[in-house]
Structure formats: C-alpha cells, structure tokens
Image 1 (cartoon, rainbow, N blue to C red):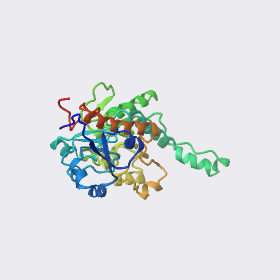
Image 2 (cartoon, rainbow, N blue to C red; image 1 turned 90 degrees about the vertical axis):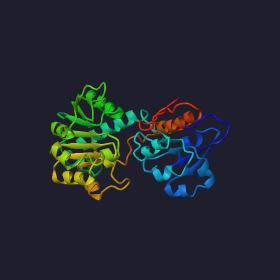
Image 3 (cartoon, rainbow, N blue to C red; image 1 turned 120 degrees about the vertical axis):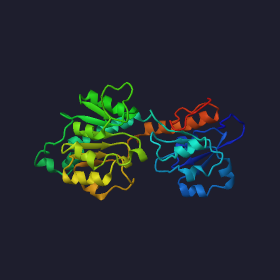
Image 4 (cartoon, helix red, strand yellow; image 1 turned 180 degrees about the vertical axis):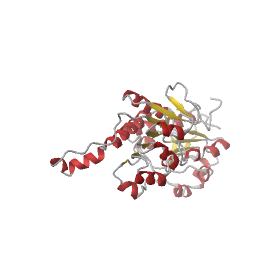
Length: 328
C-alpha cells in the first residue's frame, strides 16, 4: 500500500451517482474520473485504468465486486458511501492490499430516528389515517381505533451495533422493554441478549432489523422467525432487503401470521412486490433511512476525508474491519 505524499497527480474514480461534495471536495492535486455504472468502467481509457489509485463508491446498488476492482492494478483504496458495504468485495480487497472504508456514525441517529418513526407509523396506522382524513371520511365518522400500539410491547432488536444501540435508547425513552439478538453480547449493553433468534422472536412481539447485508445474514428473517413472532407481531426493517425472506413475509402478512410490517428496504430495489404495495397493514418507504440533506452531506464528506487522509500519508478515518490499516 502506497498512499505516500507526492507532487504527482492522484487519479480517483467516482463510481456511482455524482454529488456536489464529491465533485468539489478534492483539491487540484486530484484528477477525478466518473463512471455511473459497471458499463461505464469499460469505457475508461487504458491510461486511466493504469493510473487510478482511489475509488469512491457512491451508492449501495453500485457493485464494487472482483470484476470492478480487478480492473485497476494500482488501486489502493475504496471509500464506500454508507454504513453497509456488502456491495464491496472486501475479500478481494484484503487479498490485494486495498483499504476499504465506510461512513458510520454520521448516519447513526438519522437511521435510528427513521426506525422509530417507521415503528410508530406502522403500529398507529399513520398512513391509513392520513388517507382517511383526505378522503373526507372523517366528516361522517371517526377513524377506527388502531389495533397496534407502542404500549404493552416488547421489542427485539436484531443487531446491536451503533444504530441498534441508538434505536434502543429511543425505545428506552419511550418506556418500552428492549431485547436483542446478535452472535455475541455487545460490550456495554445492558439489554437482555438472546443468542438464538427464534427464542427472542417468541419472547417479543416486535422485531427491528438493523444488521449488515451479505451472505451471513441472507434471509435470516424467514418463515420460522415470523411464525415465532406471532399474530401480534410487527416487523421493522431498516437494514438490507436481503436480510428478510420477502416471499415468506408476504405470506405471513396475508395469512395473519404477523400483524404488520414497516419496510425501508427491499430485496430487489427499487422494485417492490405488488402484493406489498396493495396491503393496508404495511408501511413502505423508498430506502430513506439516512436520506436527509444534512446527513447525506456528512456521509459524502466522510468519503472525501477518508480518501484525502490516505493520500496524505495518514490513516483513513473509518476503515472496515476486513481491511485493517497497518503502519499509520
């Protein structure tokens, strides 16, 4: 890994959608190249491919896999936008001494806010109630009492990283009992830990999903988990669509196996099954967990700062665990 200070120009690739902070955040020492998708990579000149040293991956739908990373023989660093980085081939990066970074912390509170809002909106039927008022029905009769409520609920959080803990703090403030499932107990967390997801689903009536995507969590919320959650069950997913078996969820909602769901993420975004869109017991959001101007700007700035640190000979601010930085 080089990353040494040099008077030479540093060639960087903005891979994915371009945004103002990414486009204007680098000094004249850097030469920016752009590729919005995998096909655009094929159009880069051999000279650019040979010189490129850094890459900013600007959205989770852009695949920075082996075929993409392997094109660039001098690639030293991939700065990924977002806390999840399952779209980046970290195994390939590690094998080829490429540092990968993500953008944690700056989006923690925003995503936790959305999880809490989505939970309450789902339980108290805010979307249905809004449509009821706009239709004029309130003029003739009051909106029916909601079956769901945050009161008398037990919430199990699947994943207890930074965002999971922030969700837990909000639930505690609302006087809601909190439990969690993870592979091992989280340091400094006092909530009851369940090493077995099925057992936690049986013990609670609400699941909030906030684990990374990838092969290890694919379809971990399956028919068995949903059955264990039971007929009062509510599922909230602000993680990755791949974590939930979408077909099993549709079946559980249709059959009454669980009560309702609030979803910010989907298996094949931006496509959402028509069956989910037609259901009245589901609240659907277009993956907006961190999507405020202030938070997305902070995430973009962290992408820029990670790359600038690296090529100034410093350690990047937020390297991922799979590609640890040594000697800085």
